[in-house]
Length: 267
Image (cartoon, helix red, strand yellow):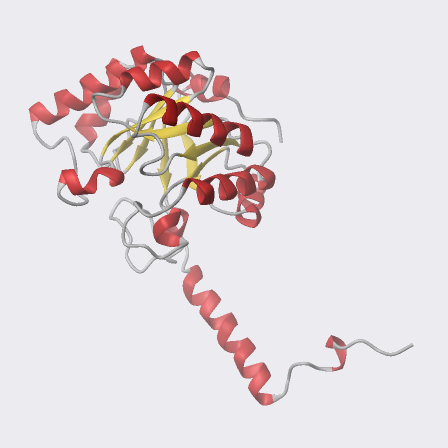
């Protein structure tokens, strides 16, 4: 596959083309996604939930995120890879943030870094942009701020809140962000954001106006115990995997495995 670049991402809206993005956390899955032409992959801190079993994204470490982002890059060399910065890795100081973001880029080969941003982090985005890092600014529902937001709630439901999100979107475009991720907002909000910025807008439960859409892979494959309403139910891979595991267990218990075809012969 031809390498998918930021220029390709920017060209989608003028061409009237919508882009598919999925979360990905490992080499093997990344390879399959690239084979079917998924051009945008987000190595999300949602790995804390779907890989490590934490109730929130907060406990996941930078070391773990670097490791799995590197694996996804190896599996999908042609995709546009966005590495997610975990909670606490860019909040202590400007110096800490720049060091850790640069580490993510250097050690993983990702194309872009995602930050969950508040209205007070434009200077950080500007600094990283000046350093040559592509930043995806995450607005709307920000799971790392769940303690402040009061839970996983839809954002931008009032006129005032919508105007604040639009203002932040414009603010981060001016600061140099190369794209936005807009999570869990009504369609009116994403429409207003798209109308007010020129950079690509990726929606996560944000309505049809966005230039592309991302969901957690586990949600569309029914590998999650619960899925958000915006995640389409495409396949029940969970039941298929359980059936395979049960069949393997049965083969062992009945003596059907290992058979003659599964053993090595002596010379």
